[in-house]
Structures are given as C-alpha cells and as structure tokens.
Image (cartoon, rainbow, N blue to C red; front, side, top):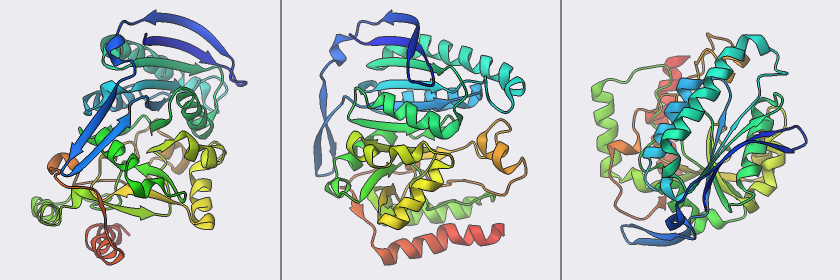
Length: 334
C-alpha cells in the first residue's frame, strides 16, 4: 500500500520518523505499461522513482513539482523529495525563513497531490550537506526500492512528454551500452543563452525541427548535466560516489572525458533549467548575482509532435545544428 512518509535523515543516514500517512491506491501496485511511439513498442517496469532535491526556493520547487505532476506517466512513479537542512550552512540565518517557507510549501503541495503518485516520501536532512552530497543521498534513497530514477533539482521545468522521453531512452538498445551512464532531459541545441530570440528565429528553428523530425533524435555527449538526469541503479553505482563529492558534477564530467563515458541527450529539450539567476540559488551563491552563465531553450518538445522511433543524429548533423542554433548565440554573448 503506497505511503507518504516524512522523515529526517541524519549524517549517518539514520531516519527519524516525523509522520506517516497511509494512502489506499492498490491499483498502482505491480503495474507495468506499454509505450507506443511510431513503430516503437516497449514494455517497461514502472517501479521507478522521481527524485527532487530542495533547499530554500519555495516558488521554484513548486513549479518543478507542478510540471512533474503534469508530465504524462508521472502517476506510475514514486516521488521522493529531500530538503537539505539550513542548520550548519555558511548562511544559516540568512536562509532560515526561506527554508521554513519552503518546507511548508512542499508539505501543502503534497497534501494536494499525493494521490497522484504511487507513493510520496518527503525527507529532511538533520544538517546541511550542500547540493552534491544531498543529490547523492537523495538518489541513493530513491534507488533503495527502484531500479530507475529520474533526478531533478528544484528549478527544472518538465515538459508534458518528459517522462515518456526518459522511458523511451531507458529502453533504447543504445542506452544499454556500458559506456552510457545517464539520460539527459535538457538539450544543448536551440539555446539562446542571455538573448531573447525573435519570432522569426523561433519559426525558423521550428521549421527545421519539424522537417528533420528532430524531436525523435538523440546524441551522445561526453558530459552529464547537473540539474536533471535519469539513470539505473547499476549505472549509478559507477558514478554516484563521485557525484556526491564537492563539485561532484564537474568531477563526473572529468571522469567522462577520462574514461570515455557519455550521456544520452535529446536534441529537443524535454526539461528546462530556469534557476540560473535565482537570488537564493546555488549558481548565484557560487558565481555571484551578475554571473554570465545563462540557459534559454527556445525550442522544446511541447512545440512539436513525436511520431517515429528514436534515432541518433550523426556527427555532421550534430555539429551543423550546434553551430547554427547554439554556438552562434554563445558568440553573441561574449
């Protein structure tokens, strides 16, 4: 029987139960499903988890959770949320009120939406662990009872077909290759950085995406995104410990480059990182309020329609697309 659990995680991993509510949703138990896209028919185990990392950005994490709930297929998943503690951080007092507000916002959201998921688990750390260790502990927790996890930070927006994308990629034969560590939800293509593309820019990009069926294309890139990715228990066992170290996202990329590991990326974004300049976000704390890094995906899957099997974009096509629809914007930003 699905449950909603609220627990506190100590540094040693001990759980202190804060509350327990039992939900009656037996129809979710043991369910499997078939996904049909074009000629693709994949049967997949639905004992997966969606893991959301939170800290002190109430409005942001609510937007992430709302987008996950709207994403098709999310009702087949366990939802696990881990909020890092404020106590012990470098700016405990500065963030305390925002942290409390975030806790209340998450609890209220769960009370309204818990029936949608197979189960909901909301945990809080006893002490501040920082974003890297928190992500590792969250994913480890999610994979205790699941073979597959979709991880998200608290400032990512899921498109309605995002979970379907992760499922299609998971069952694709190319993801099973041992050198593929994870599946990305974001895209490196059609990113205008700090610029706002004109209607003409967007129309031209959409026309190309439609004519070349780019929504059903993927590429391999030798780095993993930090904000949102999916992986299996077995693959996570290879890089999860690295991801939990200080600057663990960068350390994972370094390992990818050194060991020939790659990530399975969509050409058309299924998820968007919208928190690069949130005043309470890690990017601002690390780089400063006026840092120059931007993400701005101006073509996403909600603008297009999928109809065929997933196929890989060849190297020539990938480089041409990046040069015209991403690197050009980067040059304008310099």
